[in-house]
Image (cartoon, rainbow, N blue to C red; front, side, top):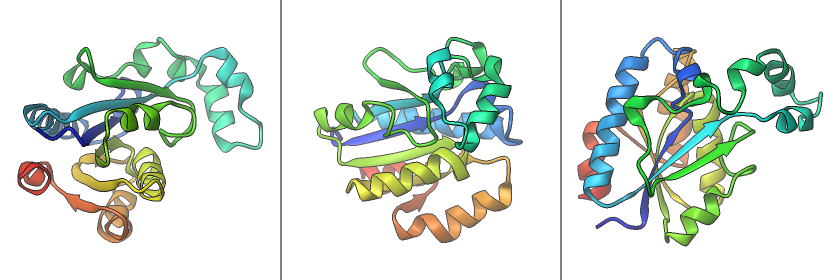
Length: 189
């Protein structure tokens, strides 16, 4: 069993997946990664972004995200269909599920406390978007001393060139970049 490993499925939400051209392939790859991780007893964690009215009001105007959130309230409102995790990769009872109000998953959630309570020290990352939640998570998780793996084919971005640059040049400095096909051998083998 791989009880010190967690697969984080980040921002695989209905409204966000619509921003990437390869959503169907990402969902298929994320589903395969989840099934592999479950087979080995790894923790599965879900990170989603959604805002209550109080969260929207708390965003300072100087934050570039504030204008987007205010303009697209219906798209980012907690409880809307757009902020729901896609059914293809839906959580099961016992999985970690956190709701964030920033790009990264640590600052506005209890994700780290939940991971540490389960003695997780290794994270496998899948997320939309590569230049958003994945980049933020790689940087912060590395600073928090997690061993990191990024699933290159379970991450996607509306800017494919940004995805490629991060996967090929930036992430390898702090994480092992692998494919879903390599997950079993490289992480659980």
